[in-house]
Length: 503
Ligand code: RVP
Image (spheres, rainbow, N blue to C red):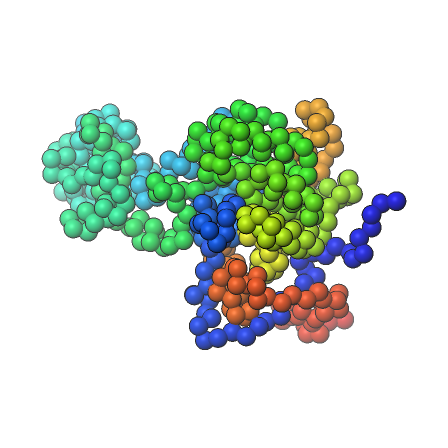
C-alpha cells in the first residue's frame, strides 16, 4: 500500500503571518532584501552570487527574454532566459544582456555631413531626439565627424538646404570619451564641461555610444541594480537534461552567470547526470540550480548531486495543469516548508548552505513574504512578470481591457518537450499547461517597487530587517476557510457596485 501523509498539503493562501514586536529602528527603508542564490559554506565564506531582491523571473518563453532580464537586473533580481529555443538564440539573448551597458546608448539619430538642415529636421521628427551624430557614412558605427544639437541651428534664419557640415559642432571642438570611460567618469566629464551628451569613440574615432546627461538620474534611480565584477548585468539561463553538452558551453561562452535545469520534475537520474557533467567539465566555476522537487528526499538527492540551488514546486503554477493531468504535485507551502527543513538539516550536517527557490503559485504580494518566512531564499514568478511591458508577449485589447499573453512551457504553444521528458521521444505527449491572457499591469519597475514595499512593511511588522531575520522571527498560522473570508472586505456594499448588489 502507498505511503499516505497524515496531513493534507497546503498552499500560501491558507497561511497568515502573526506580527511580532517591532522596534523604532524597524522601518521599511532599513530593510535589506539581499539573498543568496548559490551554495556556499555559510559562516566560513561569502556567497559567490547574491541578489539584492529575492525575485527571479520564470524560465518561460512568455516571460524571460533579454529585455526582461535587463529590466529585472536593474531592480536587483535575475531572469532565467528560457531554454525552449535554439542554443544560438538563447546564447544571443544572454550576450545581449551582458553587452548592455547601462547609461551607454547606441545612437539612433545619425546623419552624413553632406545632408541638409531639412534632413536634420526630418530625422528629429522621426526619432524625437534632438542630438544627432554626424558620421562619415551616416551610421551609428561610422567615424564621428561632428554633432548637431538644437542650439546649432535656427530654422527661421537658415535655408533648409544648408549643409550639416557647415553648422555642426565639428569633432575638433567636441569633448569625447574613449572606450574605457566608465559611466561615473562620463558623468563627471558631462558636468565639468556643461555638456548635454558625451560621445564615446574608439581609438580610430569610430562612434560607439552616447552618454546623456538625463540618463544619469535614471541610473541613480536603480540603486539595487545587479552587476558583475565588470559592471555588466547579471543574467541566468535555463538548460535541459538532453542537449547540455552543447547548450551549457554556448551559454557559459555568452556570459551566463547562473544556469538552472528546467524540469517539471527534478528527482531524476537525468538531473544527476547533467549536474555531474557540469561539475566534471567546469568544477564549481559554473553555477547551476536544479529542480523541481517537493519533498525532503528530492532536495537531498539534488543537493548531493551537486546542485547550487534547489527549486521547489510541482503543479502550483498559474498556467500549470500537471496535477490534473498526471495527479502529481503538492501544495506549494507544505512542499516549501519540508524542503527548507531538509536544507537546514543538510547545512547542519555538511556546513554547506544550498539556497531554495520557491517556484510558482504566487498570487498576492504577501505570498512572497510568506514564502521567504517559510525558508525560501528567493522566489521564481511567471504570471507576475508576464503582465509587464518588458515581457516578450503581445499586448492586446480584449473587450476594452488591455491584456498580455501568457502560456505554459507544457502547453502545445511552447512545445517544450524536454521539460516534461522522461526519456521518451522528442515530442509532447499531452499538454501540462495552458495558453492564457493576464491583465496588463504596466512597467516592471513600478510593480516590483510596490510588491517589495509590501514585503518590507510586513517584515517590519515581524521585527525583521533582513530575510534571515524574518525566517528566524516570523510566526505563521494556518487559517480556516471562514477566516479567509473575514480577511477580505465583508458585510459592506462597495460604493462602485451600487446597492442593487446587496441582495
Ligand atoms: P506562476 O508564477 O504561478 O505563473 O508559475 C510559474 C511556474 O510554473 C514556472 O516557473 C514553472 O515552474 C511552472 N510552469 C511553466 N510552464 C508550466 C506548464 O506549462 N505546466 N508550468
